[in-house]
Amino acid sequence: MNFQGQLKPVITMVAVNFGFAAVNVLLKKILDQGTNHLVIVAYRQLISAIFLAPIAYFVEREIRPKLTLQILCQLFFSALVGVTLAQYFLLLGLKYTSATFSCAFINMVPVITFLLALPFGLEKVNLKSLAGGCKVFGTLVCFGGVILLILYKGKPLINQHHLTKHGDMTFSTSKTESWAIGTIFLIAGCIVWSSWFLMQARIGKRYPCQYSSTAILSSFGAIQSAILCLIMEKNLSGWILQGKLEIASIIYAGVVGSGLCYVGMSWSVKQRGPVFTSAFTPLIQIFVAIFDFSILHGPLHLGSVVGSILLIMGLYILLWGKSKEIEVCQTQTKQAQVGQLQDEQSTAVSHIIPVTSDSTVP
Image (cartoon, rainbow, N blue to C red; front, side):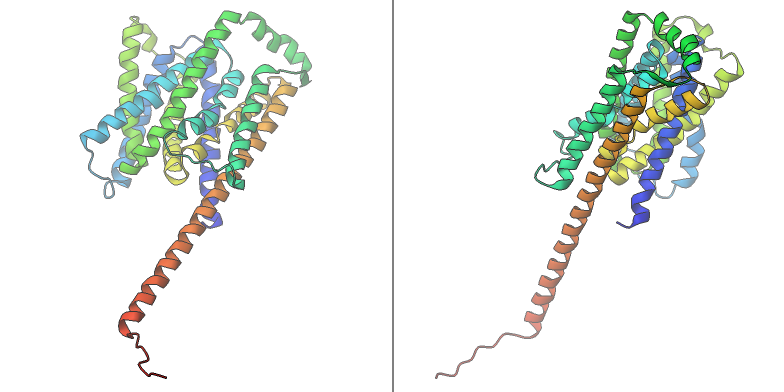
């Protein structure tokens, strides 16, 4: 694989997680204003479907395979797991906790995806090889960074005055019960999102059209979320969006978060697999911390810095191991092809020039 081919999935996933980070910050603000989380999911999926449908029609109309009932059923359950339930649980967790805490928890997705991929055969680990050891070690380092972010806050490095006025007030007014409930929802959201990566890896092989599949996923997600919201919330006034920030945030979440980002993830899963794609989720935490500090003027703590450094180190180690594994696999494939070509050439020569035996008796 050439350098450009290796770099393209990396750049794609960095851009995807940057978009997700901006979505989380915006949605946290409108959730604090009282917007229903299921209404957010339904609207953003509807906007995503409307945005992607014409792109999918014109870009993939000549390469799109036949949409069978079996593929539709798989896309329906993929939308239920990766769109409706994942966003439902993650937004509930975001509502009961904070943007920084929820993004730190999302960083468990690569670890969970890696563990779930092993029994399904989508990921293999050879602990005797350097690449396999790096994948395991990188995953453990990522997990350690997540634990540090969750359990250790540390002293504020800068902006002490703002911390006393704003940061401590946030933690003092948040009840322990609500924080625990939010943690449970975040764990559930991480598990179903990790499961979606594995489901998408199988669907991508049978229906390799990212725009079309994402548009169908968004349509199913909008319908599922709307039905769930109507069942749980009888008050229809919650569907009326109020304020420019609320409308702009949901439009951005639909076009970028549920549209382009899911297209990028589906493409990355197809190119490099579910573990590679999910390994970039720790970047959401880092981007949110940057947004929180530079734009929202939030405090910066020692635990966040050290945890983020561990996440970057673990991500780099994991991706390096994955890259080495791909190189070894490609080298073995080329060697096998060369050996097969040599055998075929040897067989052809033996047919053209028959082997004669020396009949002379000494």
